[in-house]
Image 1 (tube, one colour):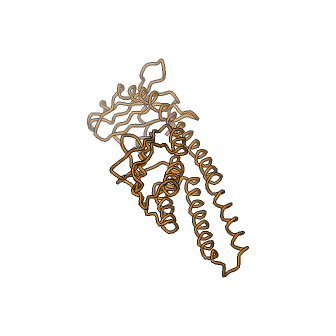
Image 2 (cartoon, helix red, strand yellow):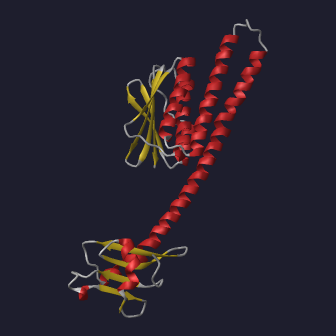
Image 3 (cartoon, one colour):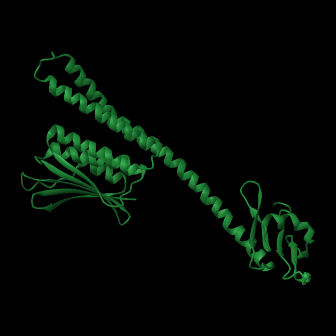
Length: 304
Protein backbone atom coordinates (compact mmCIF):
# COMPACT_ATOMS: atom_id res chain seq x y z
CA UNK A 1 0.00 0.00 0.00
CA UNK A 2 3.03 2.28 0.33
CA UNK A 3 3.53 2.50 -3.44
CA UNK A 4 3.61 6.30 -3.51
CA UNK A 5 6.17 8.84 -2.41
CA UNK A 6 6.00 9.27 1.40
CA UNK A 7 4.55 12.81 1.28
CA UNK A 8 2.39 12.42 -1.82
CA UNK A 9 -1.33 13.06 -1.99
CA UNK A 10 -3.24 10.78 -4.36
CA UNK A 11 -6.71 11.13 -5.86
CA UNK A 12 -8.38 8.60 -8.12
CA UNK A 13 -11.87 8.37 -9.64
CA UNK A 14 -12.78 5.81 -12.28
CA UNK A 15 -14.31 6.86 -15.58
CA UNK A 16 -18.01 7.62 -15.39
CA UNK A 17 -18.60 5.19 -18.25
CA UNK A 18 -16.44 3.05 -20.46
CA UNK A 19 -17.41 5.30 -23.36
CA UNK A 20 -16.13 8.30 -21.38
CA UNK A 21 -12.51 7.41 -20.68
CA UNK A 22 -11.67 11.08 -20.41
CA UNK A 23 -13.70 11.32 -17.19
CA UNK A 24 -11.14 9.16 -15.38
CA UNK A 25 -9.17 11.16 -12.81
CA UNK A 26 -5.80 10.01 -11.51
CA UNK A 27 -3.57 12.63 -9.91
CA UNK A 28 -0.86 13.04 -7.32
CA UNK A 29 0.81 15.99 -5.63
CA UNK A 30 3.97 16.42 -3.62
CA UNK A 31 4.41 19.21 -1.04
CA UNK A 32 4.93 22.65 -2.60
CA UNK A 33 4.16 21.27 -6.05
CA UNK A 34 1.26 21.21 -8.47
CA UNK A 35 -1.07 18.35 -9.04
CA UNK A 36 0.12 16.14 -11.89
CA UNK A 37 -1.44 13.30 -13.78
CA UNK A 38 -0.67 9.81 -12.50
CA UNK A 39 -0.63 7.02 -15.10
CA UNK A 40 -3.60 4.73 -14.32
CA UNK A 41 -1.48 1.64 -14.92
CA UNK A 42 0.63 2.69 -11.94
CA UNK A 43 -2.49 2.30 -9.80
CA UNK A 44 -3.70 -1.03 -11.14
CA UNK A 45 -2.56 -3.11 -8.17
CA UNK A 46 -3.92 -0.61 -5.64
CA UNK A 47 -7.26 -0.33 -7.46
CA UNK A 48 -7.56 -4.10 -7.61
CA UNK A 49 -6.71 -4.43 -3.92
CA UNK A 50 -9.12 -1.71 -2.77
CA UNK A 51 -11.87 -2.84 -5.16
CA UNK A 52 -13.30 0.68 -5.25
CA UNK A 53 -14.19 3.08 -8.01
CA UNK A 54 -12.71 6.07 -6.20
CA UNK A 55 -10.20 6.73 -3.44
CA UNK A 56 -8.01 9.40 -1.91
CA UNK A 57 -4.81 8.79 0.01
CA UNK A 58 -2.59 10.94 2.23
CA UNK A 59 0.55 10.43 4.31
CA UNK A 60 -0.12 9.42 7.89
CA UNK A 61 2.15 10.99 10.53
CA UNK A 62 3.16 8.38 13.08
CA UNK A 63 5.34 8.62 16.15
CA UNK A 64 7.36 5.68 14.87
CA UNK A 65 7.78 5.01 11.17
CA UNK A 66 5.62 6.11 8.25
CA UNK A 67 2.09 5.29 7.24
CA UNK A 68 -0.58 6.10 4.70
CA UNK A 69 -4.32 6.43 5.03
CA UNK A 70 -6.84 5.53 2.33
CA UNK A 71 -10.51 6.47 2.04
CA UNK A 72 -12.41 4.48 -0.59
CA UNK A 73 -15.91 4.60 -2.03
CA UNK A 74 -18.04 2.89 -4.67
CA UNK A 75 -20.60 5.69 -4.79
CA UNK A 76 -18.83 9.00 -4.27
CA UNK A 77 -16.27 10.42 -6.68
CA UNK A 78 -13.54 11.93 -4.56
CA UNK A 79 -11.79 15.02 -5.89
CA UNK A 80 -8.54 16.80 -5.14
CA UNK A 81 -10.14 18.90 -2.39
CA UNK A 82 -11.09 15.67 -0.62
CA UNK A 83 -7.47 14.52 -0.72
CA UNK A 84 -6.28 17.83 0.75
CA UNK A 85 -8.91 17.64 3.49
CA UNK A 86 -7.85 14.08 4.32
CA UNK A 87 -4.24 15.24 4.62
CA UNK A 88 -5.22 18.05 7.00
CA UNK A 89 -7.41 15.71 9.03
CA UNK A 90 -4.66 13.11 9.36
CA UNK A 91 -2.11 15.74 10.37
CA UNK A 92 -4.38 17.02 13.15
CA UNK A 93 -6.19 13.94 14.40
CA UNK A 94 -3.70 11.09 14.39
CA UNK A 95 -1.02 12.76 16.55
CA UNK A 96 -3.81 13.46 19.04
CA UNK A 97 -4.93 9.82 18.92
CA UNK A 98 -1.36 8.68 19.50
CA UNK A 99 -1.07 11.05 22.47
CA UNK A 100 -4.32 9.68 23.89
CA UNK A 101 -3.02 6.13 23.50
CA UNK A 102 0.23 7.13 25.21
CA UNK A 103 -1.65 8.74 28.09
CA UNK A 104 -3.87 5.67 28.36
CA UNK A 105 -0.80 3.44 28.64
CA UNK A 106 0.67 5.75 31.27
CA UNK A 107 -2.62 5.72 33.21
CA UNK A 108 -2.80 1.93 32.96
CA UNK A 109 0.74 1.60 34.27
CA UNK A 110 -0.01 4.05 37.08
CA UNK A 111 -3.18 2.13 38.00
CA UNK A 112 -1.18 -1.10 38.05
CA UNK A 113 1.39 0.39 40.43
CA UNK A 114 -1.40 1.82 42.58
CA UNK A 115 -3.04 -1.61 42.80
CA UNK A 116 0.23 -3.14 43.94
CA UNK A 117 0.59 -0.45 46.63
CA UNK A 118 -3.00 -0.91 47.82
CA UNK A 119 -2.55 -4.69 48.00
CA UNK A 120 0.66 -4.25 50.02
CA UNK A 121 -1.03 -1.76 52.36
CA UNK A 122 -3.97 -4.12 52.79
CA UNK A 123 -1.59 -6.92 53.68
CA UNK A 124 0.46 -4.81 56.12
CA UNK A 125 -2.36 -2.93 57.86
CA UNK A 126 -5.13 -5.54 57.93
CA UNK A 127 -4.01 -9.06 57.13
CA UNK A 128 -0.81 -9.06 59.20
CA UNK A 129 -2.57 -8.06 62.46
CA UNK A 130 -5.08 -10.88 61.92
CA UNK A 131 -2.21 -13.32 61.38
CA UNK A 132 -0.64 -12.15 64.65
CA UNK A 133 -4.00 -12.55 66.38
CA UNK A 134 -4.36 -16.08 65.04
CA UNK A 135 -0.89 -17.02 66.28
CA UNK A 136 -1.72 -15.65 69.73
CA UNK A 137 -5.03 -17.52 69.90
CA UNK A 138 -3.36 -20.70 68.65
CA UNK A 139 -0.66 -20.48 71.33
CA UNK A 140 -3.28 -19.89 74.02
CA UNK A 141 -5.37 -22.81 72.75
CA UNK A 142 -2.40 -25.17 72.82
CA UNK A 143 -1.67 -24.22 76.42
CA UNK A 144 -5.11 -25.44 77.53
CA UNK A 145 -6.36 -28.94 78.03
CA UNK A 146 -8.90 -30.14 75.50
CA UNK A 147 -11.62 -30.25 78.17
CA UNK A 148 -11.03 -26.68 79.33
CA UNK A 149 -14.26 -24.60 79.23
CA UNK A 150 -12.64 -21.97 76.98
CA UNK A 151 -11.34 -24.47 74.42
CA UNK A 152 -14.47 -24.49 72.27
CA UNK A 153 -14.63 -20.69 72.11
CA UNK A 154 -10.94 -20.48 71.21
CA UNK A 155 -11.47 -23.03 68.44
CA UNK A 156 -14.27 -20.86 67.07
CA UNK A 157 -12.02 -17.79 67.18
CA UNK A 158 -9.29 -19.70 65.35
CA UNK A 159 -11.77 -20.69 62.64
CA UNK A 160 -12.98 -17.11 62.35
CA UNK A 161 -9.51 -15.58 62.02
CA UNK A 162 -8.47 -18.24 59.50
CA UNK A 163 -11.54 -17.52 57.37
CA UNK A 164 -11.08 -13.75 57.57
CA UNK A 165 -7.41 -14.03 56.59
CA UNK A 166 -8.35 -16.20 53.61
CA UNK A 167 -11.09 -13.77 52.51
CA UNK A 168 -8.84 -10.75 52.75
CA UNK A 169 -6.00 -12.47 50.92
CA UNK A 170 -8.42 -13.28 48.09
CA UNK A 171 -9.59 -9.67 48.06
CA UNK A 172 -6.00 -8.40 48.01
CA UNK A 173 -5.22 -10.70 45.06
CA UNK A 174 -8.24 -9.36 43.20
CA UNK A 175 -7.09 -5.78 43.76
CA UNK A 176 -3.51 -6.60 42.76
CA UNK A 177 -4.62 -8.27 39.53
CA UNK A 178 -7.19 -5.60 38.69
CA UNK A 179 -10.09 -8.05 38.61
CA UNK A 180 -12.95 -6.90 36.40
CA UNK A 181 -15.57 -7.60 39.09
CA UNK A 182 -14.02 -5.41 41.80
CA UNK A 183 -17.45 -4.29 43.00
CA UNK A 184 -18.65 -7.90 43.38
CA UNK A 185 -15.45 -8.89 45.19
CA UNK A 186 -15.88 -5.96 47.56
CA UNK A 187 -19.47 -6.86 48.41
CA UNK A 188 -18.58 -10.50 49.02
CA UNK A 189 -15.73 -9.51 51.35
CA UNK A 190 -17.93 -7.06 53.29
CA UNK A 191 -20.78 -9.53 53.65
CA UNK A 192 -18.40 -12.11 55.06
CA UNK A 193 -17.19 -9.57 57.59
CA UNK A 194 -20.80 -8.84 58.52
CA UNK A 195 -21.40 -12.58 58.85
CA UNK A 196 -18.56 -12.81 61.36
CA UNK A 197 -20.12 -10.06 63.46
CA UNK A 198 -23.44 -11.88 63.42
CA UNK A 199 -21.94 -15.24 64.38
CA UNK A 200 -19.69 -14.03 67.17
CA UNK A 201 -21.40 -10.90 68.52
CA UNK A 202 -25.05 -11.39 67.50
CA UNK A 203 -25.07 -8.08 65.61
CA UNK A 204 -27.07 -8.15 62.37
CA UNK A 205 -25.58 -5.82 59.75
CA UNK A 206 -26.84 -5.89 56.17
CA UNK A 207 -24.74 -4.81 53.19
CA UNK A 208 -26.67 -3.19 50.35
CA UNK A 209 -25.49 -1.83 47.00
CA UNK A 210 -27.69 0.37 44.84
CA UNK A 211 -28.56 -0.76 41.32
CA UNK A 212 -25.69 -0.02 38.97
CA UNK A 213 -23.18 0.39 41.78
CA UNK A 214 -19.60 0.33 40.48
CA UNK A 215 -16.24 0.97 42.07
CA UNK A 216 -12.70 1.18 40.77
CA UNK A 217 -9.99 -1.13 42.02
CA UNK A 218 -8.19 1.98 43.31
CA UNK A 219 -11.04 2.74 45.71
CA UNK A 220 -12.17 -0.79 46.55
CA UNK A 221 -9.52 -1.46 49.19
CA UNK A 222 -10.07 1.95 50.81
CA UNK A 223 -13.84 1.45 50.92
CA UNK A 224 -13.33 -2.00 52.43
CA UNK A 225 -11.27 -0.43 55.22
CA UNK A 226 -13.80 2.35 55.81
CA UNK A 227 -16.81 0.04 55.96
CA UNK A 228 -14.99 -2.59 58.02
CA UNK A 229 -13.97 0.08 60.53
CA UNK A 230 -17.55 1.38 60.62
CA UNK A 231 -18.98 -2.07 61.36
CA UNK A 232 -16.51 -2.67 64.15
CA UNK A 233 -17.26 0.77 65.59
CA UNK A 234 -20.88 -0.36 65.91
CA UNK A 235 -19.69 -3.36 67.91
CA UNK A 236 -17.17 -1.50 70.07
CA UNK A 237 -18.90 1.79 70.79
CA UNK A 238 -22.65 1.08 70.80
CA UNK A 239 -25.15 -1.38 72.20
CA UNK A 240 -26.80 -1.71 68.79
CA UNK A 241 -27.98 -5.16 67.69
CA UNK A 242 -28.55 -4.21 64.06
CA UNK A 243 -27.14 -1.95 61.40
CA UNK A 244 -27.00 -1.35 57.68
CA UNK A 245 -24.33 -0.38 55.15
CA UNK A 246 -25.46 1.20 51.87
CA UNK A 247 -23.19 1.80 48.87
CA UNK A 248 -24.18 3.88 45.86
CA UNK A 249 -22.96 6.18 43.08
CA UNK A 250 -24.56 9.59 42.69
CA UNK A 251 -23.53 12.98 41.30
CA UNK A 252 -19.97 11.88 40.55
CA UNK A 253 -19.50 10.55 44.08
CA UNK A 254 -19.17 7.20 45.77
CA UNK A 255 -21.48 7.31 48.78
CA UNK A 256 -21.21 5.13 51.87
CA UNK A 257 -23.83 5.14 54.58
CA UNK A 258 -23.22 3.18 57.79
CA UNK A 259 -26.15 3.32 60.19
CA UNK A 260 -27.17 1.54 63.37
CA UNK A 261 -29.95 1.63 65.89
CA UNK A 262 -29.22 3.53 69.10
CA UNK A 263 -31.03 1.80 71.97
CA UNK A 264 -29.05 3.88 74.46
CA UNK A 265 -30.87 7.00 73.27
CA UNK A 266 -29.43 10.23 71.82
CA UNK A 267 -25.69 9.96 71.28
CA UNK A 268 -23.06 12.56 72.09
CA UNK A 269 -21.82 14.29 68.91
CA UNK A 270 -18.81 12.42 67.56
CA UNK A 271 -16.68 11.91 64.45
CA UNK A 272 -15.05 8.52 63.83
CA UNK A 273 -11.37 9.43 63.62
CA UNK A 274 -9.87 6.74 61.39
CA UNK A 275 -12.79 6.87 58.94
CA UNK A 276 -12.53 10.66 58.80
CA UNK A 277 -8.79 10.44 58.07
CA UNK A 278 -9.23 7.93 55.25
CA UNK A 279 -12.08 9.96 53.77
CA UNK A 280 -10.07 13.19 53.86
CA UNK A 281 -7.10 11.46 52.20
CA UNK A 282 -9.42 10.53 49.32
CA UNK A 283 -10.72 14.09 49.01
CA UNK A 284 -14.11 13.18 50.45
CA UNK A 285 -16.41 14.43 53.18
CA UNK A 286 -17.95 12.79 56.24
CA UNK A 287 -20.98 13.65 58.35
CA UNK A 288 -22.81 12.01 61.26
CA UNK A 289 -26.60 12.22 61.10
CA UNK A 290 -29.53 11.31 63.29
CA UNK A 291 -31.45 9.63 60.47
CA UNK A 292 -34.53 8.91 62.58
CA UNK A 293 -35.38 8.54 66.25
CA UNK A 294 -33.05 5.88 67.58
CA UNK A 295 -30.90 5.69 64.41
CA UNK A 296 -27.40 7.11 63.88
CA UNK A 297 -25.75 7.22 60.45
CA UNK A 298 -22.19 7.93 59.34
CA UNK A 299 -22.31 9.31 55.78
CA UNK A 300 -19.21 9.38 53.57
CA UNK A 301 -18.97 10.89 50.08
CA UNK A 302 -15.86 10.35 47.95
CA UNK A 303 -15.39 11.99 44.52
CA UNK A 304 -14.75 9.55 41.67
